[in-house]
Amino acid sequence: METGDSRTRIDEFDPGNLKIAHIVPWNASDDDLLFWKQIGLRWVRLEYGREDPNVDALRKVQERFAGYGLQIYSARHDIYRSLRIQLGQEGRDEDIEIFQVFVRSLGELGISVGLYDFHPANTYTTDRVERQGYIAREFKLDDFRNKIEKQQFDREYPAEEMWEHYTYFVKAVLPVAEEAGVRLGLHPDDPPLAMMNGVAKLFIDYDGYRRAEEIAGGSESWGLKFCVGTWIEGGEGMGKDVFEMIADFGGRGKILDVDFRNVSGPMPHFVETFLGDGYVDMYQVMKALRQVEYSSGIVPDHIPELEGDDKVRRAGAAYCIAYMQALLRRANEEVG
Image 1 (cartoon, rainbow, N blue to C red):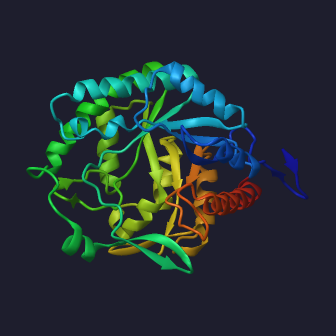
Image 2 (cartoon, one colour):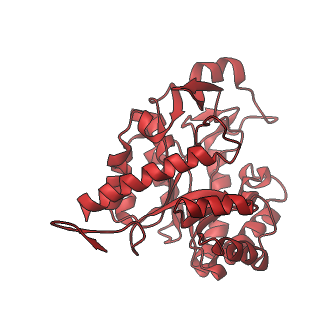
């Protein structure tokens, strides 16, 4: 800890403080890993795609990242996005078994959080636009409904059926997570619309998360991958605002990972912005997380594109991470 003039300031890297992190793919180049180290990053949310989830394969990734001072605190394996799982199709048990192997591997390696979402047939954006000179993703509800939306499967999937498929999946994986000492964070539906492309969305508001929590039956391994950007996209339609969600779920230790993102305004039209360029005061969000003693990771998400950026978005990511570091330093000073 560092001592200020009149109070004790918690350093970013002190135990118990929240972790400023970044989303890094398992096959990131050595140059990329060195770059993240150079800007002071220490924590990583691992994107593992659909690679072999056995513990030896994951250990090699963990050890390679550790060579650059990067520690994996959470991870995602995309097998949960299998349509056989999310639409209840034949063969889902085989795909669930792959996710279970992944969760067990995380537990063996001391990676405490696994991540998933449950929104097949999703449309995240309707266009890419210029905002203040940078390129960002845009969503216009009218454009989606009138120009883009189409039924992607042979029939519609109503909400109660989707709840059945979600329940089947989570009941199969939560006991494995509990045994492995891993917690599973559920991402909300982005954007928060009740129906997209013929498939009902479940996690579009506070009530959806509360129902999911009830299905989990009090399991300590169930929680939220709380996407601030998604929540502020929904505005008043979410049932509780972002600060109320942090106080509720965060106050009970149910927020396991955070996507730290801002947008230009709530539905029906928004542009994804840099952190200081949206309609929500992200310092207040950071402060709220510190007030509930949130201690897992926060990552910049859907990073806009700056001149010269490639798909890794090094410049944009470095800008966001530095911004977040400054917000956290101030929150630590104020909250203590």
